Length: 404
Image 1: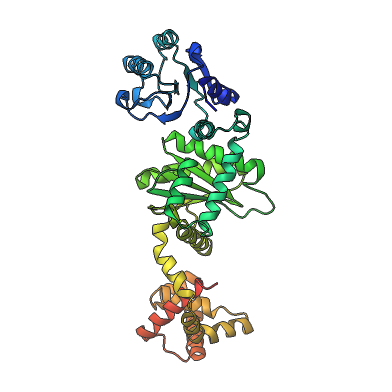
Image 2 (image 1 turned 180 degrees about the horizontal axis):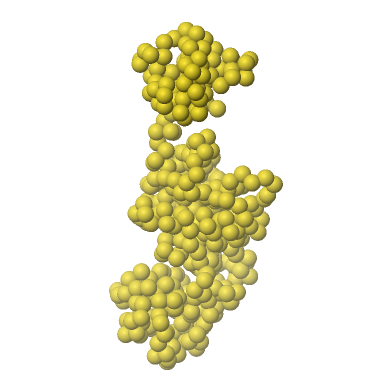
């Protein structure tokens, strides 16, 4: 089954793009598509290719645009689809030349995400090569893309995919960004009874997130699960840029869901088979943030490495035994007497044994502080003036927080 430019026009008729010139070339064949990222494309042009571009590489350069159209005609390309946002005034000479050469010229919707534009074309090209009828082709819409992204994401997380070759094939087919990549995870704060990121909100969430990425010319894929949105982005960005993008993503998410949102940024991943490991780190990051009552909107996972180490240590059986031996009697006394001796000890260890600083932090009179310390020493049968003992108690208090 052959694919023509007239079929591409039909695919984009719902708002992806509009034909502005070269309508006499609608019967040009389309066998592949390509993305334009540099101004000089002549040696990469080939027959029956649909060229899609933001226009950034030839922004406000009329001569470069005219040369591109001429070169595409000589290479017998299919059509040119371009965004106009980087042209103050799109040259009328380009429209005239496209009409003269019968080379179809599309204006892409400046507000549409590149995945919304490219994915239906990719499906059409693949299915045409596999002799699938056009009627079936149009049933492959954005909803299918969302479901396929979700399916691949879950299969990677659950370890159902183990071969790198399969990963490369499926991520390429779904237009996922090439590695190295990062995962920016957006999570909604607990906010009572709501259904965020579900049904229509999920579609809007993904669409708005992809628009933010496109604004910065970043290829990305978004997957939503319950109250989290995972934005997988390609390319190398500075931490400053990653934070800026993440802040915009949280703002969009809060608008869509009417709920406070925060973001965690993973380290670079060199392969999608690493996703289960990254997902575990993200889960731990959210747990740490909640436990420590952090208020930052954007957090880099690398900055939580110390906390994650303590979290892992806290899960060990020997650690639990140590904490119970060092602090168990004090915790039991607090439960029986509704006291706060364990909290007092925790603050005292944080202040490196300084009674004065601990009393100030707890808003206690020095006599009350002295009485509590005496009681703690009796219950634990220990000496809080012994620095080595104090260090062990500090560790026990600290790791205990990661066991709750």
